[in-house]
Image (tube, rainbow, N blue to C red; front, side, top):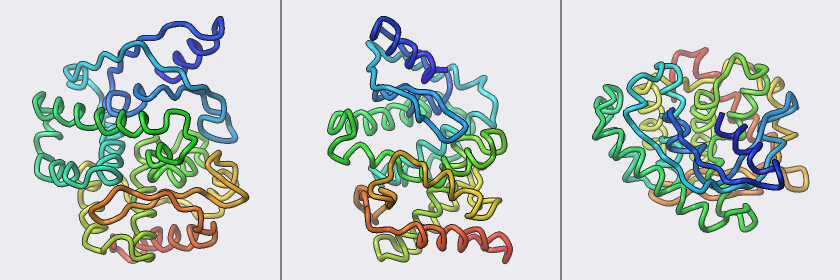
Length: 262
């Protein structure tokens, strides 16, 4: 809703003022912030959009008390994403406060939202229009996540669920390339599963490939892929061929067939 209203505000009379009042966890920690607005097409996520900063964002965590569980967990995936990519201590804090988050303790939720807001705004201030590559770090896990959403016709996979699986895939790829240790991958999988999020894809890479190839983050036919790094900010890489991403995706999908996460 916020993305659609924001896109309308950006285009009506070439831009009118906008106030975002996010009432879901996903919107409070991610989509209401940073000024990216847009709508989806059958061919892919957010292919029509604009940059349009709101005049104000008003986020009341009490709204989260009545949010349906299936929707609430979508925001947890985005919170894990920004913690894994930008602030490893926040990831540890989420592990320690998992029960409070799941109980929706208001003080815990307020801290979670505030820390995620500060991280996202810090990144977007570096690179508002995504020209230097800094803002692309916020796409951690999204290449695979958007592919799962599009391949399901935006009905089988919700955004956060797709991002959760995408995080596992890029974390496994980062392990393969020596950027992340297996212990962090194990922690990531445990945290996502503790939040009730999926960690395994349900369809072959061939189903995702046409959608991934249309992803707007491609440069010269190769994906600009964001990979997590141990104890550091994530990094944008342009040297990962689609074939390697597909291999790792299928490796993660095979974990479900052998009954093991990692």
